[in-house]
Length: 329
Image (cartoon, rainbow, N blue to C red):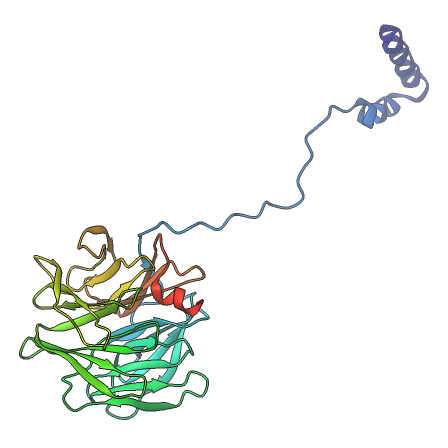
């Protein structure tokens, strides 16, 4: 039956060619009944998937020379903006969008220069003002700056840490003598000296359970853990790890209590367990990282302030930062 149909079709085509000429045959051959099925053509180009960052590999965040050589801080607010000190000139604080666009946020009072920055749960900003022996408070909505704490016994408050209750801790090095102190800044702004006669105290952080204060000494290359007692005082320090070379600067915890420490002079950030075991070491594209913070939409972006190129760099990690988690508690 099929063979008869094919023969009949050929006869009809030949007849059409004879009666109407070759143009009719061409038309029939171009018709749907004579075409070979072709795959459909997609309209437009497929949307390209955004390349995912490689974990523990740093890339630039801001342009070079955006900050001064005093670039420090940094800290992220709830919206993901990054704040760092000494934007374009000393005595300022810059605000950086996650895409790297930077602008001036505030100018500090005359004679004040910022260092470490922390946020509390209400979004208030705290800045270590080392020349004036202050901790400043900044209202992010009004940008009003006030002195939150002041103590003339301070050498130069350097970096800050904050626990889940809003109590601040400050490192306080004396670079000339190679010594340092530790301070607690209570929620009423009063100050308590927790320890003195230490090495050059620099990076400082509180563990996720509020029970341990971690401090590093830049010159002596030690990382210490102090138990925080019920009355707020510090117990006997424990050596977490001593490094053989290079200095330290800022230090922050992830949600698991691992410490991320900037290695000033080596140009890296190490991820270290609370027992001192090094898990990862990240090249941060400049020899002089000063501090770091966690941010990004999932809390797994680490932003690093770096002096050599006077910029921020960033890299992805496997677990969120402690400060990011506290915004969501």
